[in-house]
Amino acid sequence: MKFDLVIQNGSVVLKDSVEKVDIGIKNGKIIEISQHINESAKEYVDATGQYVMPGMVDAHVHLSEPGRDWEGFETGTKALAAGGTTSIVDMPLNGLPATTNKEALRRKLKCAENKAYVDYALYGGLVPGNIEDLEDLSNEGVAAYKCFMATTGTDEVGDFKNVDVFTLYQGMKKLAELGHFLSIHAENAEFTDQYALDKMKQGKVTIRDYVESRPVIAEVDAVSQALFLGKETGCKLHFVHISSRRAVEEIIKAREEGQDVTLESCPHYFTMDLEAFEKIGPVAKCAPPLREKEEQDQLWEALLEGKIDFLTSDHSPCPPEMKQSDTNNIFEIFGGISGCQNNVDLMFDEAVKKRGLSVHRFAQLIATNPANRFNLRQKGSIDLDKDADIILLDPNQSYQVRKEDLYYRHPHSPYLGRTINCRVTKTFVRGQLVFDLEKGIVGQPVGKYLSANSLVEI
Image (cartoon, rainbow, N blue to C red; front, top):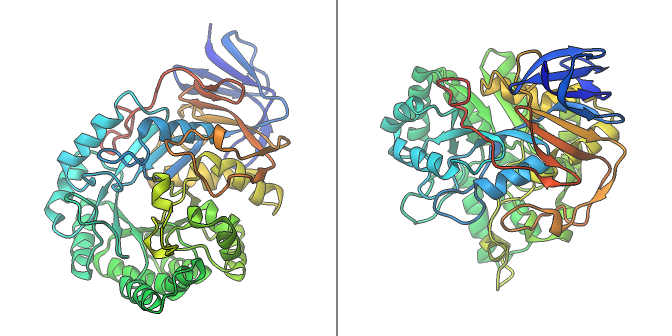
């Protein structure tokens, strides 16, 4: 038999078009794309009426291992697979210890062994005091580095800490030397910390108060400072979860002037605004916060104009008690959204079906562009010799998000009760079926570590 698997009769999303072609898969790779595959195969999948597209490359996921039971590689990657994600880049926080040196990275890799249902790359962290660890992390194969300009972390030993300006500058110089890029949570800590302190002193602790304490200016100011330091050092940059059009425009301007810089945003900024946040409650708290409707509309314009490079989940789960406060003080509540299981469906519905984004551009946003930025050369598109990381999506099937369907360790989500008007029905990782809508998660974990040093699975 020539093929292990043939996917037939679907609308296949290629780099620049959507075509009715068959896909032949052997040993986890795509080896034929043609109108009709006549050679025999061990298995056939009929994709009639569905889109066949590259699986999402979710480059912003917090699986919180080791050290915390907030999620984990097993439950987190089950949810990701069920949502149409086939590979991820896991953040250096919220596990303990944070991934800021080679020992912590090796410990995280040990946690992931034989647990992941999707392939995974890892971030290293830039924090005060670890400049000398950055090269070690590079040698261990991290895909990129992450820092916080906003205040983060706890007093627990090994927790992630935000950078000061000196660390940011020195870290950028070192990463420029190593040839890596730095991903940045861009919010000015002086703005956000002082605003929050002033609000709490006045007893203003509502959801709206929290949003007002993290204004767009705090994001734009941090972006501008980071861009300046990046230009001075020659460090390549990437901005995570950008929430405002003004920040987008600052980044685009720098790129047009020659800087190597990209940006991402997340489904929650496009699908929930401040008013929705107030109705849903603390489960929708994140940072930067959900914005006013007018700001959200401008962000949509930027996305549809092609100014946002890719979409990520920023899946940042926690136990339910961390989303509660005895004093109803929103500032005491953990900021992070569990959403990765509904990423692809939700944004296909909102961007493609409701706003007319082309399907091939959607595939670029969720798969091709992040794969290219993180140099995951076998991922991100349906093409010959690429990994057969493929999802099937039914554009005519609607469903309601229910708690009992979520694979998260702690199954809460701001999307509960929401109706989504399309659905991922199958997910293949290197040609292996890991999720089927009728069967659920299928088989044993198949995910492998994507080392930046080898650029292939090891």
